Image (cartoon, rainbow, N blue to C red):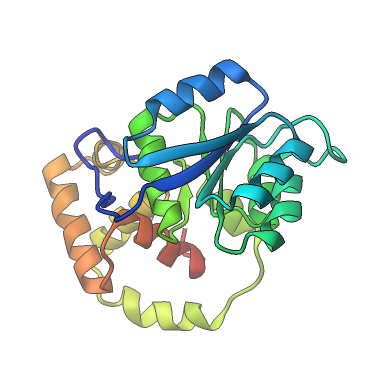
Length: 230
């Protein structure tokens, strides 16, 4: 996720983002509600699969923040919630928020239709940025989780051929930075991986976004995922 000074998600919306929190731990739900930004309005909570499906389909929130391990239903947890609720709420986007970072959990909930997956080690500001990103149509993943999605999903698409020409616009170093940023690494982590300064990373990211005609690192993640470049 981003460092503290890297907030790139615009919160200039005419209406707050409405959110339903789905988690079977009431203390966690309370803490998360308190940590979310002022532009996010929590309209409901649920602690199990069946109650989650009911409240989501009734309230039609912009975003559902849900754990992947939930009691009830047929045992499918967060993935089951997405599969059952999503057809009834086409405007709602689902963002998994879990302590688990296993490939099985990540792939299951993304296959079901979630737009992203972040871990509970994320800060309140990181979760807030992720909610705004998902509400805006972007895909969001905690560091190092995007590769699980890439490994799980199909063969090459026509977008891959297009991506060859697009990648030709980038230098070798810009490609290295692009892949790490798209995977969710912070600027500081990229600098450490590549043995360059944070300022140099910022310069490369600006160049990558300009050359690919993207506006944020979250758009970059979605672009890279669509082309299986991670």
